[in-house]
Amino acid sequence: MPNRSFRFRVLAVLLLAAPLLGPTGWAQRRGEQPQIDPNLLNEDGVRATKQNRYEEAVEAFRKAYLAEPNQDKLVYNYFTSLVNYSIFLAENGNASAAIEACSQAISLVPREIIVASNLAIFFNNEAVKQLEQGDFNGAIQSIENSQEVVRRFQLRQAAEVIDRTHARIYLMQGREWFKKEDVKNALEAYDKCLRINPQEVEAYLDRSRIYWEQGAFKDAVTDLEEVLRIRGEGNSPNIEGLINRIKLYAQAAGQPITDQSEFFVPEMSGGDQPTESKIRRLLRDVRLRIARTYQINPQTEIHVKIDANQPLIRASEWIDRPAVDFYGESFSMGISGVDPESRDFREALTFNYVLTLLVNVGGREIPYWFAVGMAQYMISEESHLSIGDITSLLAAAENNLLLGTERLTWKNLENMNDTQTIRQANLESIGLVEHLAEILREEGLGTLLKAVRDGLDFNDALTDITNMTPEQIEEEWKNSL
Image 1 (cartoon, rainbow, N blue to C red):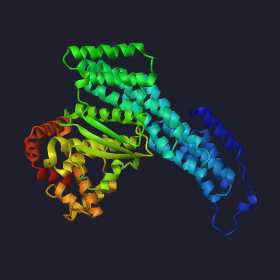
Image 2 (cartoon, rainbow, N blue to C red):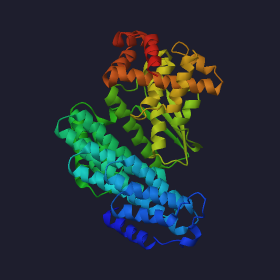
Image 3 (tube, rainbow, N blue to C red):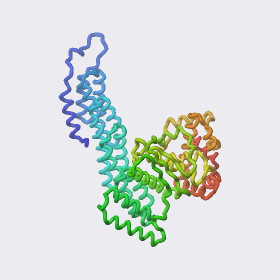
Image 4 (cartoon, one colour):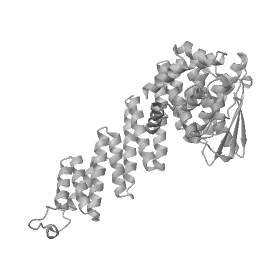
């Protein structure tokens, strides 16, 4: 973990490195412009470092380096000043600037990637400290800073440790919500924990208890079976006994577990049994998360075809495709070369499931823009429109080139071949749904989906709930760009 003793060791190197060049090469002749003396700048940098003025030190060493970029000691001094500054920024809560300073340092001396690992571990340790203090929001922010470092510098070895910490934060947050009898938020926290670390036994145990109390016996048993799988056969007799008791209780309550719908019929080709088991678990977790959020499940079983010999089409790649091959009964995905527990696969699975679910409950009467927009929206809580996307949509709006809800239909997209127009159609769909979600929030979106499931026309249901027509919502969204 980076600390102040590390900084003092760097300072010692700088002091020894101060006399770099003899004065004769930098003597100024009469009438010439004053030249930059890297020796003096180096001394300025050392002095600033001694006084903990790290930003000034960086600037002094930067100028010295620019004056003599081929001097190894000047390169190293500039590098170490950036490392010191990165640590200082991290300790003072400026994560983004700390990461940027670290990035600049590594660009100078790429072999010293360990400084990025130190920064990632610093943020990880901050998260652990905040978690111990019950500061869940602070811990989540710190661990996300750590993960940003891991992603930026591809620190695969550090990723596993940091993911475990991240998952643990959500586990403890789930328990805190459960103590407050906020079951919905507790389940969401356990879901997040298991998405990050599918091997977190305690999250399965905690979540199974909630399912049991809710009467979701099959889900409770499935979570406990995951515990058995992780711990190994024969290592958890108490869990095996609990599973048997739940099955008997469900039978006595008239809800035999064998009769409870899975909602899915997975069909795996070219894969192995462990991969199929992971996919079944992921399907169930995605379905449960959406069912809890919007109180909606498929009306009929969905066939899920997974081909281990075909490449995965990532959720982000659908932005350039017309998502018209969804009819509510099935969807197909490739998984070649992709870990089923990876973020890419989970996002693609969520996208395919949500699109299929919406058509399953609402048919092709549900608008294309809403189905595609919701499928992208449900992947994560973050916006799926970049600054560039918003700029592109704004330019289209200013030139009256937006397609609009009337033209964002299944039929129009089926006959569309222009990639640029398809991309714009999908971007508009995402923008419209994100705006609608701001208006309705989760509860309102759930009410809308249930109304459509019960046979009400989508536009009528939308108008009843928002007191706005789709065209009015579209106009409001355009004005918000």
